[in-house]
Amino acid sequence: MIRILNTLSVGLLWMAINSTAGIMYDLAFIHDHVRTVNILFYIWFVISLAAYLWYVFRLWRKPIKFDEY
Image (tube, rainbow, N blue to C red):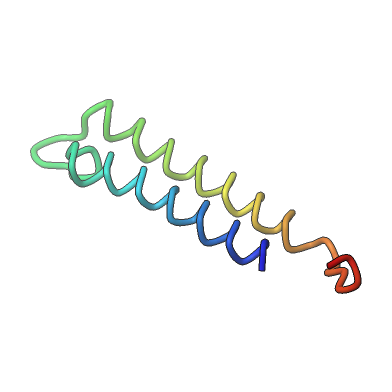
């Protein structure tokens, strides 16, 4: 249960940060030309997605020990 909650909570936090930065602060949309902040946003997006996936794979790679609880 802890793994599921950790995966969901970190995933929702990641989505909230990136959707806030991308949609509300207009960093994900390219209007007339590509700005530096658009490039930085997409670099951040890819790096943070890789970090989140690394965390999830590392979390779920450990075997589940049912007799601990």
